[in-house]
Length: 157
Image 1: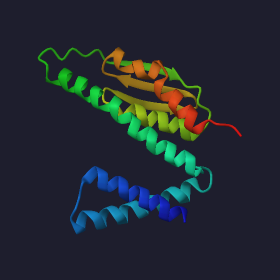
Image 2: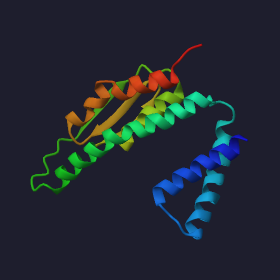
Image 3: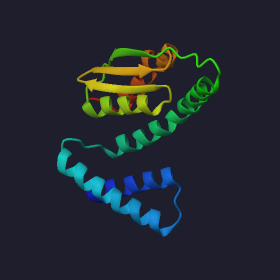
Image 4: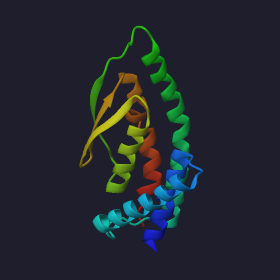
């Protein structure tokens, strides 16, 4: 059952990314989603389990990232297309208060999905983040993403 859910989620993600309406992209996406789901289950086993509420919460969280990603993409586009290329790359170290490995991985991936920032390393609770400009790290250092993830994934019974 978990394999079917993971395959369905992966296939849906594939369709969103490729917008492929033909049978060949659809078949390729389905095969790859099934393969990734099988490999993930083999290596992760039952270590990572999400409740239904957490799954829905992560979906809402992913949708809430869109308003952060689009303005960041425009900022990066303006930087890249400007004649000056006024970038000041920085690598920052950021210590998260998130405890669950799943929440930490979600934070690292959220940072990487946001243009202008890239999570280079995640070791325990320490993230190493590359930014094109220091101000691009503001949503990270202000803990906006971290607080949202903590509400979704760090609840204790």
